[in-house]
Image (cartoon, rainbow, N blue to C red; front, side, top):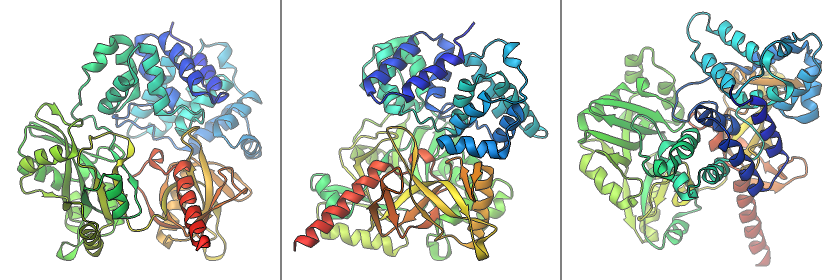
Length: 564
């Protein structure tokens, strides 16, 4: 018999009750060491709330409405019971646990069936994800009902949290890397590098605990398994970027498009979005271009796809998203929304992993293989005036701004550091997650149109509200986002619909203020949504730490002005 899922749930409870990083890493390490080899990967993913490998294209495709329906069916709970349970904790997992503890007419199958083991839960999730085609909705519901009917209240709590992908116990990827290193005897550096190349902590843990340090050393990038993109921190202007990068740096156009990772091997091409979703079928024209132009047998390339209009002028991001969401009538879409590919990096070339090479060297490799595919416009300079002119040129051509890249920077997948800095001209935008919404009034009475905007707490994984807004969207966007939010609905309390944190929006604002109104301690002044970030996952939302940085910068600026 395998390891009981109850033990994993109990581990998560302990993790939720401590804030000491070393204690948390030791708890996870001890747990991992006692697992059977085939349990390691699934257990790690379930602990961090991922369910499937990061490179996998599997998704549950089961709405939150369905989860609530099954919990109601199992427990006999009313809408009032659900609202009251959610109001007590504000956490969907705890809500489910409370309801399961107060079962009114549940079938007592847990007395008749053997306890759930980790691999049972893993297999249920795999079966739910693999249910496709006619009748798949009922099959998914039946499978989830079967899983939850066997689960204890505590197990239900963490199954629900896994479905949401919001564990709130403070286990970040960095903490899991530490725990894997402790459990296997590998160094943290070796563990982090393997994670960068594999893109999945479940795979890293399996290799580390079954093959040891040598296994981690032998890890290489895998073609057609996308890795997380390297991210950039915001900078206020080109002068800040030059100072941070030692006086000289590369400035590239920051294009207003969709970032893509392109894998090529012997005539086969796959294209992945920044969320690691396979979008190859939506971009057959880009596939054709890569096959015709790239002078390599094997490569992993990074670039940006932008939609173009008349005179090859870039079109707004929303136009491009229509391409990414369509695979039917694709030939028609190619004519309606033509796209252009710009390349800016190469991570793997003809059997050689290049992420440890400096940026300047990777660009040299790219120049040798790109053919007639355009490279992202760039300059290398130490002159602030030249950099500012280049910034203004990028903006005048309809692009977002610039990305400054340190010349000696290696490529660090999934890391947002100062080796790359994005310069948009204004700092006052944040990528935030909608966690709730109020029904509108007057003309907007049929729409969810006042949105609760949240930043991610890196320490706990919780999304903390920092403001509300109903400004910025068109009527068509109000209608569409209402439909999507209702599919993500957890519960409704007094006209406020609480939802699974899934939709990311870019938010502009005038100022960040301290506020006791929100748990986060911050509030946005005059927030308005500038666009829906279809290309970003909740994990990529801005953090409370980022909010604090902007607030402190504002505070220092005000203090300086007041002292004059």
